[in-house]
Amino acid sequence: MSEALARNGETAVAPGLSDFMPGGVLSPEPDSRVNLIGQDRDGLTALVAEMGEPAFRAKQLYHWIYMRGAKNFADMTNLSKAFRAKLEEKFRLDRPRISAHQKSVDGTQKWLLRYEDGNEAEMVFIPETDRGTLCISSQVGCSLTCAFCHTGTQMLVRNLTPGDIAGQVMLARDELDDWAQTEEAGRKVTNIVLMGMGEPLYNTDNVMAAMRLVSDGDGIAIGRRKITLSTSGVVPDIQRVGEELGLSLAISLHAVRDDLRDKIVPINRKYPIAQLMETVKGYPGLTTSRRVTWEYVMLKGVNDSDEDARTLLRLMEGIPSKVNLIPFNPWPGSEYECSDPARVESFLAILHRAGMVATIRKTRGQDILAACGQLKSESQRIGKRERDRLASIRAEKEAAVGL
Image 1 (tube, rainbow, N blue to C red):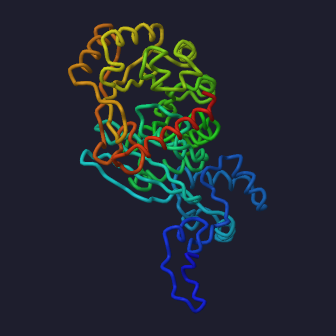
Image 2 (spheres, rainbow, N blue to C red):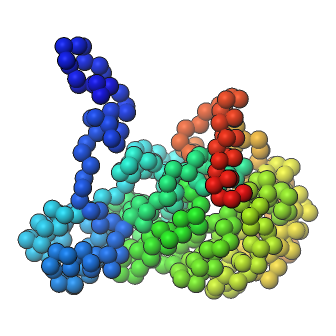
Image 3 (cartoon, helix red, strand yellow):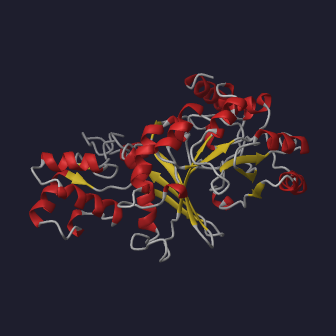
C-alpha cells in the first residue's frame, strides 16, 4: 500500500494516485457481472437461454439496451420483477466512464473516456447546422506512426472491444439527451466517423461488430451510409468492410508520391499508392452520389504544390471521389507547419477547375485539442529526451506492423 492505510505502529503514509487505479489497494472491487453492452442478438439469446428464459426475452433486452438506451434493469418495465432481479444479479449495463469533458467555444465537445482496465480513449462531438458528427476511437493509442499526427506518437495499448466502441456512441446519446429523438425529430448525433484514436482496420472484427449494433434499425439505428470508416490504407480489409457492411469510406492519403507517403504515412511502405488506389476503385457501392473521401492534410512545402494537386487528380481518375483538404494542426515536437491559406486555395482551385468535389475542412475544437490529429492528452514543449522516446516508440510500432 503506499502502505497507505497500514499502521503497524508507524505513521500512515498518504495514499498515492496509483493506490486508486485499477489493481491499487484503494481501488474499488471489480464488478464481476457480465457487461451486456456490446452483446449482439446471438449473444443475448445465449445468455437468456442459460438463465432458463424464453428466447423472446433476448429481443426485449436488445430493444431496451440499444433502442431505448436503458442504464439499469429496473427501467425495463415490460419484464417481470423476478427476471429483472435475476438480470441485476448477473449482468450490468456499463458505458465507459468520463475522466474529463471539455467544450470548445465553437460548440465542439471532447470526452476523455476511461475503461474498466484504467485505459483511456477520446471521443469528439461536432455539431453543425445540418448534422451532428460523433468522432469515435477504435484503439487505445494507435497502431500507426503518421508523422504529422499527434495521436500517432502514442504506443498502442490495446484494441477496443465491440462494447467499448458501441459504448462511446451510447454515452454520447446519454450526455446529449439524445435517446428519445428520431433523426426527423432532431436527433443530435446523426453521423459517425471512425476517425478518433487508432487505425480501425487493425481492429477490424471488433469495429465491424460494433458498427452492426450502431447501424441496426432495431438498435442504435444510425444508417450505414452515415457511418464513415477512415483508414490510412490497410488494404486487406477495405474490401471486406464494403462487402459486409457497406460503410462510407475515407482514406487518409496525404501524399501523392510513394517516396513522400513512405515518410509521412509509413503504412505506405507495406501497401503503396498504386495498390491502395486499385483496392479503393473496387470498393462496393461507389457512385457519383456516394463517393470515397480522400483526406489530405496540408503541410507547408511538403505536399501542397500545384503539381501535387494535378497528380492527385490523376490518381483519383475513375474513382467517384471527393477531397477534404485539412489544415495542419500544430502540436509540440512536430516538424511540420500548415500550408499558407493562399497555397491551400490554389490547390483547391486546381481540383475545382477539373470538376472535383473538394472542400477545405473547417478546423473545429482546436482550443480543446479536439481537432484532426490532436487526440492526445496534454500539450507540452519537448526536449531531446522526449524526441528520443518518440523515435523509439515509432520504431517499435513500425516493427509491430511489419514495416
